[in-house]
Length: 220
Image 1 (cartoon, rainbow, N blue to C red):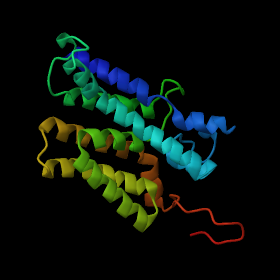
Image 2 (cartoon, one colour; image 1 turned 120 degrees about the horizontal axis):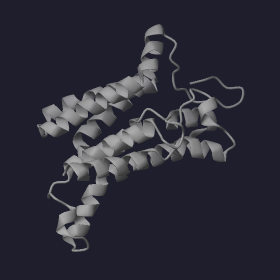
Image 3 (spheres, helix red, strand yellow; image 1 turned 90 degrees about the horizontal axis):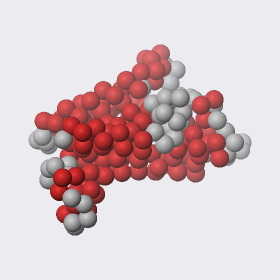
Image 4 (tube, one colour; image 1 turned 135 degrees about the horizontal axis):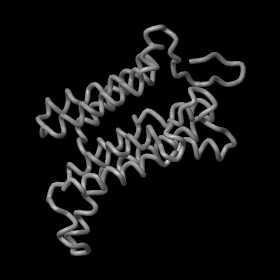
């Protein structure tokens, strides 16, 4: 089982390490590591290149988490259809492998081996995987994110509060101990990845997310 979890984590890492933000920006002639916040995440891509590329990166980053977390279930389905041997799947509940895949994807997204171990903050990728592994807690976190963003316009604050809601929601929903632990680990990871944003929030220098106005118009 340890070997299988390691393999799931390794596959998750490689999926997460695909630098979609960098690739989309590079296709537009931009090195995303040199502009804006220098992050390859969807928020920075949107700020620099506009909503179209930003949405593309967001969807692709979410899908990385979905695939990394759901892959063990797909393997189990294939096994039950008789396409692979019983020895290749050692349990009927692949949740631990899904958790390993998601953790791997988060590490890959944040420390991609394809971009000299630079990467984004992992929020979109985490959201995708959590929708597979703990959908109710993920939906609560999305609601927290949306409410915080709409009232403050701070993407970073919304992301951190959404992450912080995860372990609370999982505990209140009575999920298994392993799920609770992983929810806590993911929450801490997301907050740590936002440590620079925390400093700027405390200093009052964090940028709010605003729509670019039409030429000659005022910002919203």
